[in-house]
Length: 266
Picture 1 (cartoon, rainbow, N blue to C red):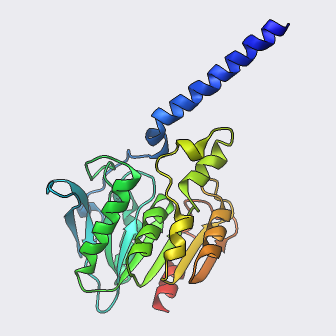
Picture 2 (picture 1 turned 120 degrees about the horizontal axis):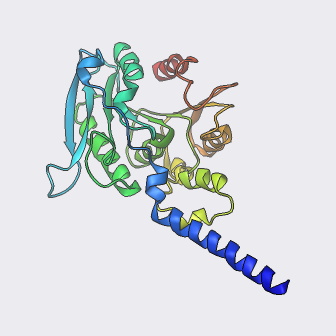
């Protein structure tokens, strides 16, 4: 019996160690959902939009991010849209069109490693590219609003901690990607294994911009408590919009853009 117990423990330990090795070696394939349809700009029905390419790597002018740009109307700000973890930003063309039709300027793009932008996908590149996009947009001479959705709330918060924008808007944010992973894999040493942690809970402490957060109580991807906790850490939290029964993907249909538009007009 003692020998059976010992061999059983060895077997369980082997399975656990194998799971750790698998997660460690495949973590970025598990963390990011890069596959998705690319919607042509001509099909998005956004007549003021144009295709842009912004180089983001030194000594490599062909390496950078591709996206869309819309010039703002009048004194409206440019909204830099940081997409979620769901393929190409172009699949969000309907909400992007709503933003543009309201007269706002727009910069939307794919992170390196996502469909429209070639390159290595990791947190360092996402953050560096996001700063380069901000620096590119600010040259237009218009106020800048940072808008992050899901995964994009990480780089949006990071940029807000490093640059001066008019406002920061976060839709279904996390306190940190590593916190979400730890909740999903409670028996794994996620904090030590995960390379791309996206520590929004640390970056938000250096954000001075007025902050809007929208989150739903039925969000099963990033629980609503993350949005509440992040808002509590902010220096200048202005509006926390919690939607009863709202999920990770239906806030736009529940009136999110109207609330954001009101917030920005203030």
